[in-house]
Amino acid sequence: EAEERLAAMDEEVRKAREAAAPLLEEGGERFLVAASVRTLAQVWREHMEAKGLSHEALFAEAAGGADGIAKDAFVALLGKLPEALEREELAFSEARREAMFQQIDADGDGKISKEELKAMFKQRFTVVKEIT
Image (cartoon, rainbow, N blue to C red):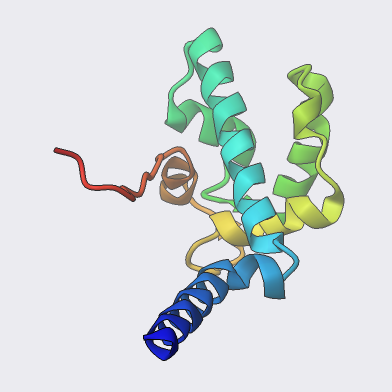
């Protein structure tokens, strides 16, 4: 019986390590970048609501009329946002802004498309307990 319990505990530890691997192995960088993208999306969502902007209008403003937002333009834009929107929680390091670009640029073509920008605003939730 003790061996069965020990084996069960070992399996639980293995599952926990597997689930926590992104935090343990990468120092949580992927998690932190995703949290930063969520923060950006929330602030932009509030800005759009206050100014009556659509996703298309925000994209046009950010892209400067181009068909996509290049990495350099995105990193520069994010560098100006804390002051422009008076939101210090957007004061990300340049390395974090570059990592955020990489995450938002889902197809890896070097620019953020209108669809990729819209996708950033989608909130995804995971159900962890059965609801009855």
